[in-house]
Length: 421
Image: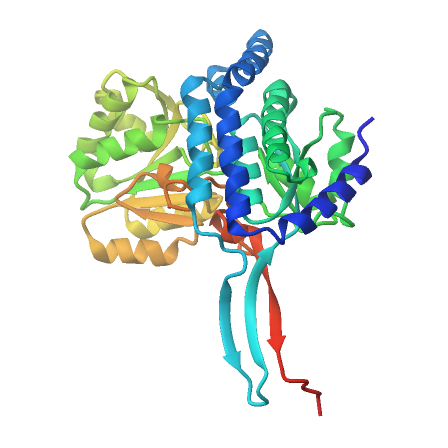
């Protein structure tokens, strides 16, 4: 039987040890994990193959199978990403600000670990390594709860992590995994506020809603992306096509993949057939508004084009489907995004820097792009190392949550036997 109270107590105890480690000690642990990933790659791949076989037998679609899949290249990438985290600057202990008060006391704010994280996630086993490495680098213990579809893969990866921790003399309870797939344990974890300091859900809207409604612990939500690109009338249309293609098809099953393409009406007749022809090479289906359908009916470049339904612009497709809508201005594009975006990743393709500035100022998404693919909203691409999540809320972290997002701070006051008058 899984005893979350025991796990929570062990995690809290481990966090005290982690919080006092030097950067060198934490980096040694991370490098040991990277080495162990490589040494145990065959075991990890064998367990993942069993998960994939079960998922395929259940009829899981290919886009989701891709999220579950580990192969030699991806496992090697996990080891490489772990070494990159070890090489990143350690934020713990950093002095954010400091000053001397009129009474002579020196006051500063210093970064410290949050303590114990509870992370609930679905589908992607690489998240296990991402979360564990960022947590360890910042001195946080973590309790993981992954999806049942990758249970074997996740258990194999946690065994790798714990074996490496044991080799460098650190508590294995620094990274724990809830093995029992009973959903009741999620609700129990959400109320484990005596031991867990922050909950991070990574999954669909239902999981985020569950965490917000039931948790007695602060929750960081995000990772649900209804992402837009707006093609302005001034855009370089030829160069815009590969950006759109990359945003949609480079990895369609992730949260920063493109969901809706907004095109200025003045360039639509020229642009839509070209972008449709390019996207159909990757099997993309378009869901278009009537005016866009009318253009594509004349020349769709071989693409499959269907009429957009009433809810299609509120869909995170996670597949090779793209919504298409025509707009009359940058302001109409902004209005559409405000109405339908989840404030994850939205962008403009333009050569009009007045429109670019207006768009950036008006769109309050976690990441706003000018002439770039939405796929760049990622901790690694932003130079943060692996990310634990992409937050779309405004407190306490926003966007890719790298190392600094997994720290808080404490005030340190240094006096000379001062007493308050």
